[in-house]
Length: 366
Image 1 (spheres, helix red, strand yellow):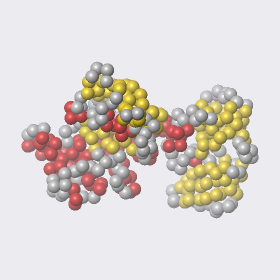
Image 2 (spheres, one colour):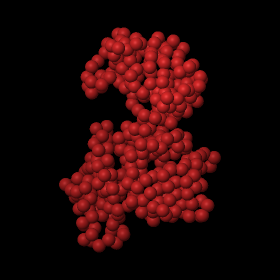
Image 3 (cartoon, rainbow, N blue to C red):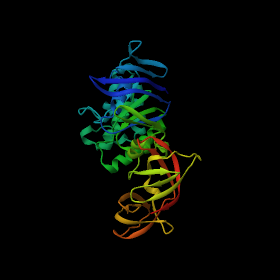
Image 4 (cartoon, rainbow, N blue to C red):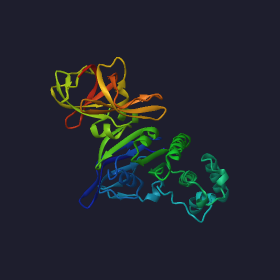
């Protein structure tokens, strides 16, 4: 399986910079998600690696083979990069059966008929669509169509599989099922997957690494739990995680935080360091804001949204409204006052939004 390396890749459309000096290394057999809001450059990046878009500057290498270099004047066609591309709309031939859709590319490559039949049968079993072999796309559900599209893409044995928001047309339940299928497929095929999405839950659940982008710039490239636990900046912290992280401005003096409402925290950095006095932002994940009898700060229940497995609670402390997640099937009455505890690990950022490090709250008072 190939390793993909991007070196200082930039793409401009006139004066607009879609991707800005991106350097990235995608390891063999990894499942990389290009994540970010609309217009951040993730699809453009995917298309440049696949050969469907020509970079303005930089170099792209697949399996130690330079497929694009602005300096050397190299630009290998997409058809010769040995990659597969799964489109958002699946792009199945409506007049062909499932079997014909899968075999079409192999027939164009002049594969022997017996090898085509064997490969189609193998893919029908792998994607669990044997019973649909003689159906047409219009006779299939969205999830079944997607399985056919994946089978067709895998038919020629591409070294890399590119996917551009392939689940966006499916309903919520089917999306969850297909995430499971894609993760299993990645394991079974032992291939390298590069996947574009704006859905942070998809990125968290599927990826071996997340490449988070904003306005064409790389924000963080790390495994999902590293991005969640140690976000590089406030944009990353806010984009990854549901419910959203609480980003609260404080004044830091002598490792004591205080906000305009008089909420005070005494903090301790997990690495034992001391942070100079300054204006900071404290990032509090909702699961580390707990309603507990031993809490030292009182908060009012602003809203309570039970879903069975968990309850999302908005707690009001002074003028602050903090997102909290309480696991279990409980519920809370709006307007009630409860003690609030802060038992977890939190991220400290500069006023400009750059990460300083992780900290614990030793004392809390109001």
